[in-house]
Image (cartoon, rainbow, N blue to C red; front, top):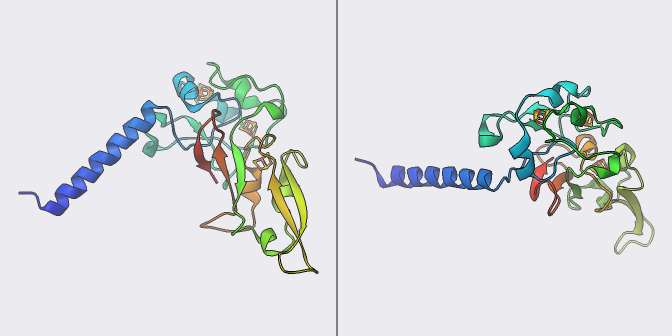
Length: 205
Ligand code: SF4
Ligand code: SF4
Ligand code: SF4
């Protein structure tokens, strides 16, 4: 007969499985997608997992989602920390997509992959060190990310040069995530989904 502990474990596994089904049913995953998606639900309904976008990406930023991603397995995804999207001016990934799962991007500012968020407790710039790596690496420098010069609290002499994300202009390419000097396990910057955009919540980094 089943021990209570294994029954509890079994119920927990069922709950996890149900949760997975619910997330997929709502088209919500936490995967960072290539440029040109229009919400995760729209994307999942159109992507036929042909891999043409993955082949087209000269930076090898795209790889098929692995077996833990349920219905999304095989769809193109980006691990920003490993290899972020370079926002190619001609978007070969989108051009290669035969179904319109990736579509509508004419210029870089049209991209809506998500938005970068800086963790001010982890970012060394907020502790008073000069860094600016994320700022200098951003393809939309001074548009999507700026350096905010401010005095340190309780310190009249030393200034802080703080990177600040401009939410409306950041497209979520993840290059800042890839280059962040703060190491594993926690990077000081990550990408979250835009509300009403590609995904809501954490999508990588
Ligand atoms: S825009 Fe360029 S780097 Fe980004 S996913 Fe598409 S092909 Fe790859
Ligand atoms: S090219 Fe389009 S349909 Fe094919 S895997 Fe990529 S997003 Fe999906
Ligand atoms: S994700 Fe980072 S690098 Fe990309 S546009 Fe936003 S701030 Fe710039």
